Length: 280
Length: 201
Ligand SMILES: C[S@@+](CC[C@H](N)C(=O)[O-])C[C@H]1O[C@@H](n2cnc3c(N)ncnc32)[C@H](O)[C@@H]1O
Image (cartoon, rainbow over all chains, first blue to last red):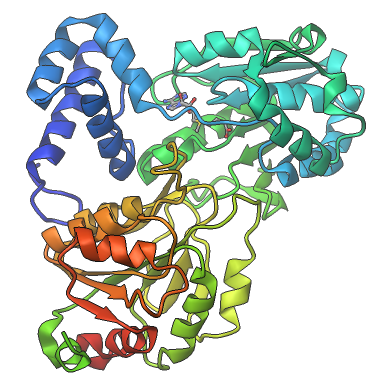
């Protein structure tokens, strides 16, 4: 190696980041080697300065020997920003164009990959309950980061997120009030326990773990943006193999199927909302 | 330095232009686009701070004033000549090693997402001395560190004249922090961009 993709030699720090990723993979099996470099490097630099680590070699030394450091570092590498009903148009399209097709299924399985702290899965659960499908659906909500999954299963969020959540809910075509599904108090809001019953939160690494079988819908939003194109292709293949024929795939509002292998066929349910249907 | 120098080959080859703008930015971008000649085709990225609303409508607005194809890039979209890219609201827009865009939801940097600094720094890592950075009007200091970094990598940096800018703190911060190649009016900036690479992209 010794060269960047465009042929220029890598800088000192760039080389160090490559070594860190290699060490993390060889020692603990976390595979960030095919993540987009621009943002990954920033996060490594950020992690080092937040934790007052001056030399990458010191970090690497510890990383190889200390599992706790590894878990901490992996948390530092992942970006966990999320929101309830983020991009309301996405949920609107699900509600108006996907739900009618799902109604014919006796049983509905949905996979939220990279669910972070769970807001997205709860948003979907609210939508399904409103559409009368709550009892027939199971949501598998997964992430690589176990800490965010702990938060997700609690279903407790800061009150300051509530006003945008209410607004998004309304814009997404919500039929009642968001407050019917949450209780508010002590600067927090709590997701109604009834909405949790059909959600299973589990750890799953999109890079190293296997397919998640026979889903009617796979939703993976704002996770692929952290991957290089080759890894996107691999993960889109994983989703393809996890989807039922005629199943739906939902991506982030700025993500596309440009990395999809040619032989897979999808049709756009709504191009700008990034909702697709498997047709081959 | 003067416009004379700007066009007289001082700027070596430029393969990407990154422009940062904040308050007053939309108007000044329109002005700039109207002044770019027909032959201008260097891929150009504008990072404009906007209210974090859903769909910005900025590309449609800017399209009316230019022959360039104005768009908010998707993740992993390749960077192409003849395009004027606008950072999508609420994401950071990064340039990745194989000259594609990468988006990120990292926390705001100095309260900004998109952050001008982040786009400029990532672009400088990839384009090195073939990058031109430019900071226009704005009421914060985003872009100053980005310009400094571009300069460090051998690129070329321009700032809008603070006296002309609707909000002068962003250009002033840039001038204070970075060793700016030229401080110019928006008309001059347009001329300068038109003249680089011998006037043809
Ligand atoms: C920006 S969040 C997106 C949250 C939510 N889907 C949304 O769009 O609001 C990205 C999430 O992807 C997760 N992630 C990153 N790499 C992953 C991997 N290899 N496998 C599973 N999840 C991953 C991160 O832990 C993080 O929670």
